[in-house]
Image 1 (cartoon, rainbow, N blue to C red):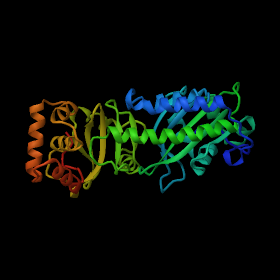
Image 2 (image 1 turned 90 degrees about the vertical axis):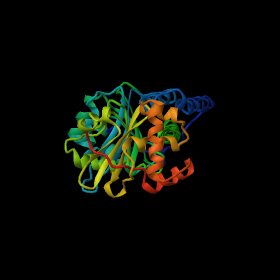
Image 3 (image 1 turned 30 degrees about the horizontal axis):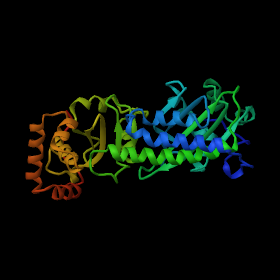
Image 4 (image 1 turned 60 degrees about the horizontal axis):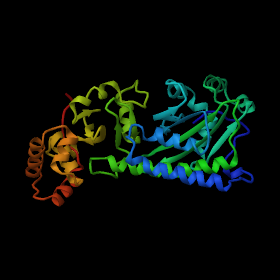
Length: 352
């Protein structure tokens, strides 16, 4: 959502004679291979940042912004839940939240899912509201191009927006095509990477799921859990976990209750923190530690790997697993997986 807009707004449906030569295609292919290799050499905290830098080798830009948004049912203003940026100030997302409802460029991208929407020039800025025009000038945004798409199963929209300064050339038709195609690969690789690092054994529940660094910075968040956090913490602005939740990191696994029925299970996920919505009616008899150990073990990890992920001794991990087997009434891993699915993979706990 790089917000310049106006009568000159374009997308590929109106593009004329895009020109891609052999060097463009070779560069694109080379960088796509780098994108595929990221999962094996980059941490989840830096994955999207590194991926967008790879695209910079295909299409140059001066600044970039990416993240997840949705439009609340009671409002027409897009709500930013998670974001990252290159070459922009730390206050960019918060400032954009104040103008999101009148940002024509962002709303055009939301209306043209999967298409590279672009705009540039002083005429576009004049067509915008004073607030948006001032915002663009403040952040030196003169030429913009963005792609927005539904993130599978999350009920949120995932976007990437790139910008150039006034002294740089505007984006062209060929660059629009390259951005659309790169964005398709980016979304697929990011979803695959998130699936790989999840440790809860419930890969289908993306709208109820969130992933954050141990410092509380959100890397991914589904719409349902985003709405629950918004309701519980009225001053929450997205992108990082609310302070009260971040402070629970040293106490995980645990459950934070949003009300009498709804809760958020907070548990370790390798070097990250995972959050999942749960309800009192769906709790299994397992404690949070037992549930985490059982979920991780059910994914094929050894008890030693369970211990490493949870930060406990192998003996303690074995104790958790033994207790889980007894309480769920199972005798092997296949029965354990079935029992966890039937229980929803959730367990009752209380905030410390």
